[in-house]
Amino acid sequence: MREATGQRIGALGAGTTGDFLMTEPGRILAIDDRPTSLKRITETLASEHNVTVAETQEELLQLANSGNFDLHIVSLTLQEFDGLRLCSQLRSLEATRQTPILAIVEEGDTGRLVRALDMGVNDYLVRPVERNELVARARSQLRRKRYQDYLRDKFQQGLELAITDGLTGLYNRRYMEGHLATLVDDAANTGKPVALLIFDIDYFKAVNDTHGHQAGDEVLKEFADRISANVRGIDLACRLGGEEFVVVMPDTDLTYAMTVAERLRQGVALRPFKLDETGRTLDVTVSIGIAVTEGPNDTAAKLLGRADQGLYRAKRDGRNRVVA
Ligand code: GH3
Ligand code: MG
Ligand code: MG
Ligand code: MG
Image (cartoon, rainbow, N blue to C red; front, side):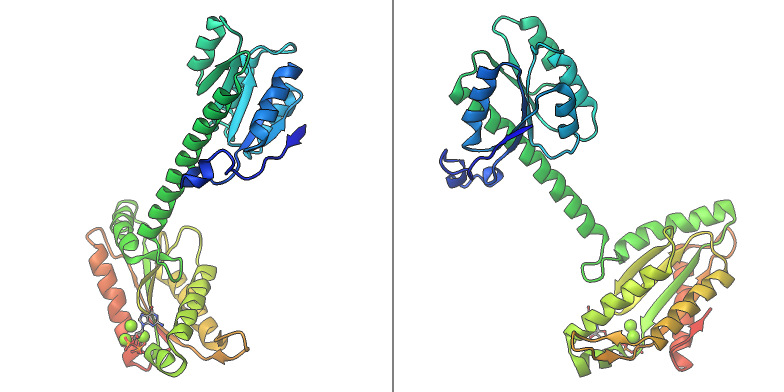
């Protein structure tokens, strides 16, 4: 393996035209067993990008499998092996499936070119490779790859924003409500109960009033972390809003739900919360209401209502307690 490290884009204009997709050098992996052709490719592209050269097919696959490249340049006519086969392998590997391939073909070798395009090679250059054309085609593939990555990231961010609470990272109310009905239906069909725990931090307004909103936020985050640490992977932990949280526990009876709720309540009451970096701490307590699905006609709204009644009584009876 050899590497030719490029400067940042700019000399060729891409970085200065406001093209946000092309502000970083591309990571290109190339294989071509003709020394003059390879030299031309690396020299031409290295001023703009980082070019890595693989000496053998095995090395190319191994390097490509890291998923660290934005573009693969593959000669279709290699002495030792079949470039077409290599392209097909790149298309079938999970790590390289989405990475564009730029093929180098012999003039007049239409048969190989057609097969290469059929198997998903994105673009090609005919030998002898013309420098400006190489730069343009490489750039065009890199831009496409980056746009694709950008859209994928945006989509994932959007998905996350839609279902999670920004402060704590727990699921949000909308997500919980969307799933609760399904879980309650499942419970009716399978006869396995679903438990719902509703939490409300006690005298939380006083935390804000005494220590500031920022400190209040820190308590909410730590509280969310403690909930997460005490529930299973199948449980749904969410922030309803403010200092109120819900945990939905599939296939859980009242006894087990009480155990989890008590463990959390005691953990909160016995272990003060960190206020800031100076080591100051704060005593916090929480009230918890619990309900478990009852019979085939139960609904999400009724379940939430019963848990809420438990919470109301926990508050009324003095707070820092669990009521089912
Ligand atoms: P109780 O024991 O009856 O639950 O008393 P409480 O003070 O906890 O209840 P109350 O509903 O009166 O106050 C809730 C407070 O939570 C009021 C509001 O300022 C605060 N709050 C709501 N959302 C946030 C938030 O995102 N961050 C912070 N820091 N405070 C919040
Ligand atoms: Mg409240
Ligand atoms: Mg309240
Ligand atoms: Mg409260």
